[in-house]
Image 1 (cartoon, rainbow, N blue to C red):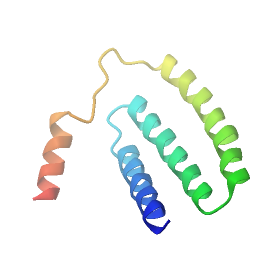
Image 2: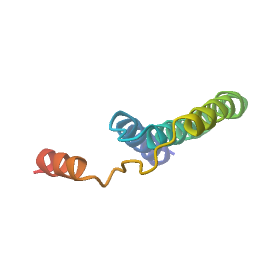
Image 3: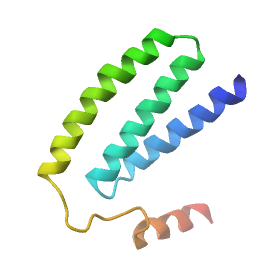
Image 4: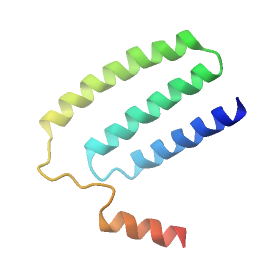
Length: 96
């Protein structure tokens, strides 16, 4: 169970980092949804089944509706992805 919570915490941290490095609002919102889902799984791991389901249905459901609307209104023809040259360069500089 400890490894399960630790893995979920690492996934949550990776989702938050992906949100902070958002090259496009589309991918930033996707990271926010993934982080929220992993947070709900963490709550479920601690035994809060009703609270995890409640957060998933209400918070993430409402967030997906708002995110879908704003994405439709602010679409980019060619959104910048995480594989862009500056992000890869930044990861290489920080990593080495």
